[in-house]
Image (cartoon, rainbow, N blue to C red; front, side, top):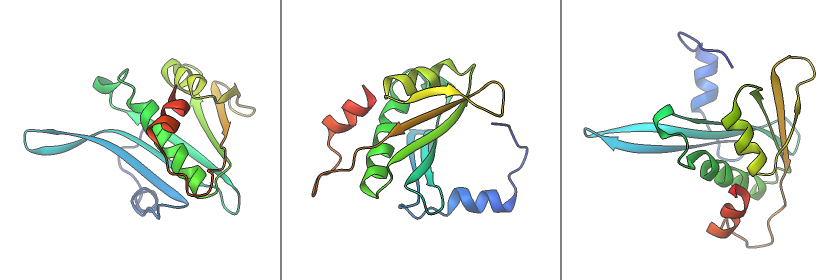
Length: 145
């Protein structure tokens, strides 16, 4: 939850080498002046040898309030459930009212971080999908409601 002037090589490797099982990243893009511009991102990374993944969602300021974060988080959760992840966990600053509202609406429990003042912990269990079940618009809508 801090800015970096330049990302270290190991961090860049972790952000860009995605295996689509233990590490998934979804992005939303728009096209402007013939260029693709990323306006939102959601990702999870599974914790080693656990059915738990840490998630993050980020939406560019001009695109906030348009339900992009809800949609990306719902798609991310559906994908996580399909690969056996049972819980999503995350952290946000206590002052991040939009993220706290998104988490509440998506059914996350929210509690103060134990060690770091001003950090809130977010957690939600995921239901395993039924055999052959895909992520439908209704299921994603229910998660994001």
